[in-house]
Image (cartoon, rainbow, N blue to C red; front, side, top):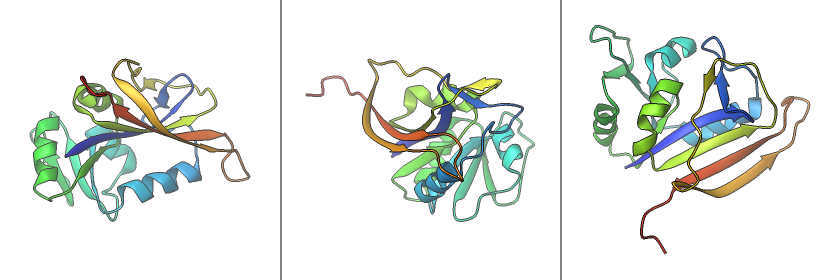
Amino acid sequence: MILSLLVAADEANVIGKDNQLPWHLPNDLKYFKNLTWGAPILMGRKTFDSIGKPLPGRYSIVITRNQEWRHDGVEVVHSVEDAIEAAQRHHVNELFLIGGAEIFNSALPQANRIYLTRIHHRFDGDTWFPELPATEWALVKETPAPADDKNPWPHTFQVWERVREGAA
């Protein structure tokens, strides 16, 4: 199974402020919905709390250290490995990890793919996406999206794949 990180970040890798996105980009929300529809999504408990409910059309998995935490419509796990096992029970090809920063950092060594929306602006933030080591990741697709009346900042949809040792 492919473990994919799905994230939007500004030019300085800011991904959040006060447990919220510091921007509103309808184009990115549509991209997120199209990628994840019908798929399992994994998120940390704080990210789930910021959304407030399971997202429709997706199988929600929440990772938390709190052994007592429960929510209707959500599978609760306590490690990335448990989340992968939960997604595999649904016979899917890809699990989308959607945040937050702590989960991104802990899962990055296991990730195979990253869908990164790079917002061409700098925002004030308190949460960052980690730098991608150039020796481990290759940019395989890039689709620019200009600013428009609904999307105030230009952005680029990027797909990164893990570089495999011994690949030709």
